[in-house]
Length: 261
Ligand code: IPE
Ligand code: IPE
Ligand code: MG
Image (cartoon, rainbow, N blue to C red; front, side):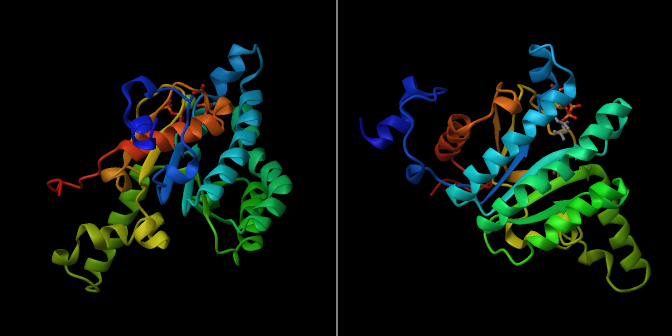
């Protein structure tokens, strides 16, 4: 069976079998993932929810390496939302400790793979130890020139848009800019993803666990993103699942409002 026959055959849709090799996929420059389903993964095993978060951290390591090896330029991972503070206190405190363990064990590998750690979201509100672990990981990997591993930590898309609006309103009030200069481009310039330049908008957004919503994740940047939803729970997301997402993305026809050439 030829590659294209494989990619487009109806029989092969939704199956991880007969997977074409990575070199045959279109690789999204920016992949963003809503890592969901840790709690249900634990519940299915009669374990406390935090056991799912611990296992989910292992998936983060796996997927980071897969994305970097595939040539992805930016991998944005939704780790903690502005709404997640409303979870039980013990769960929040476990989630806040995870970055410390994660970077303690993973930074050497990130350096070896030339991966740079960055964040979006308000890290100033994180507990001091967590914030320091994140800042240390950023500075330890600051010289790396490969994939950007961008953690959305205490991130909320609505807050991001409101904050950008405030900055622009302030600039208008101070006479630094005029209302007519507020455009989609200048607006994007005030978002936390601005530092990513033309890679700010994800090409592909993956959400695990069967939920099909954004949950306040990159609402502005997702305007033309492709979406891939899978029922697989985040701790179970593996190489086959990653390839399946890329295979699906490869088949998508991105038109950006234009007529197909
Ligand atoms: C995602 O898994 C991790 C975070 C939101 C931090 P959940 O904890 O939301 O898992 P479910 O959705 O309850 O299964
Ligand atoms: C989104 O998942 C947040 C993260 C993955 C960090 P949630 O589990 O918090 O989202 P909802 O509550 O199901 O929408
Ligand atoms: Mg969830």
